[in-house]
Length: 122
Image (cartoon, rainbow, N blue to C red; front, top):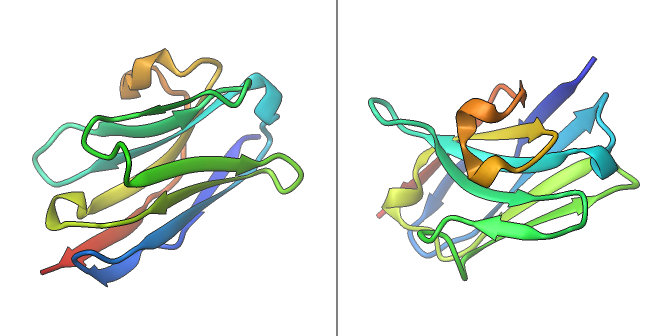
């Protein structure tokens, strides 16, 4: 059974940093693409970053140069380091897994965590 549990969200001032953590069980990172998505009320879920089983990373244009996705295979954990946060980064952030990264199309991801809220105050 696959389980993804996010943590690390919270409230931070504009320009600040947060690190999100996704603890995974029931998945082998060698066989999955791990990704982060985010969603605000009334908007479609948006792909933020992904890391495939070769360690290749993909980022949304809006976060390139500010966010970094990484994974620790020994701990079965995926991280999202978020720097220089701004109000547009405020959202519920979700960890997800799929056999491929599918260009961060959220509807093609199979497994989801419950989400962690990030709020950036100005």
